[in-house]
Image (cartoon, rainbow, N blue to C red):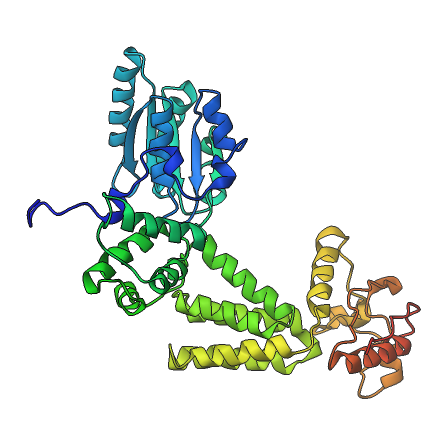
Length: 431
């Protein structure tokens, strides 16, 4: 081994050589589990392996091909194209003539566009290729339905801390790993926590830490690991899951959870203005008239984040999130608006009563436009007595809650409905 022929990375050297060496994924590989049953049948169908980085998707694909005696062709959708698929098809045809199956492993399959994915279909459907695709993105959004229907989707989970620690201990003991290197238990515990279930990240950090200290210490792990950035794909499912968790935590009035998910988004590199727009939406959708001040503060937080940028402007987002989480909640306007849209989309188009119509011309006045309209400031009682919907129609779209400022809104609404002579009573506002 020379300077120009360096050893393979630790994670590559320790890649499992059999399914028995695989750590984690017990929900797929345990007794009676899906992959165990599949291999017992002697048949390997096309699969899509969906999971976060460093959980063994590539390793599992390679081992599955070996278990059924298939030829393994690895491609990466980052660099491969239709020409590479054609090459794999040609090789698979040669192998089939010799009685051997072919497994095409397509890493990051979500990076293939629709046309590229469609190029795989006839060969997967004919059985020439057994496709094993790996993706960190939700296949529901990133893999064509036609291809998904021909492959079984299996979800791989992040490794537990115990699993990662087992791998680290194996790396220190295995001749292929770091024999002779020692590590303090506290260092392994720290690395197992920082790795976030990513075996490749854990092993790579251990390899660097071993060059900094022997035995490996927590300080060496911290130095080798660098800044701990929480896992998040800014355009992928993780981002939307975190955003959903933030919104639902605010709606549920859980301040600590709201702050935590906001921090995960900000530290993960989310666009602060995107987060700010969602915060404004929370104020309108979930706080509403229970605290009208919430919407003003949310808009101010958005403006502050835009004006100051990160990290200074992030504090304004945190202030808004705490305020919204603590605020009383009401979705009465949100529900009323949905009801109004439904009434318009599904009901008949109600005509505007003549007395409510504008009458800018003599002809329109002759037709009765605006006739009999009672101007509120001249005739309050007459204003309340006139119809604002044709034929006395009552839609019942808005119903205030008993939260916060909306207690006063409910009382005002009750009096207004009485003044308008509407028969339906609204429920008493709850304290």
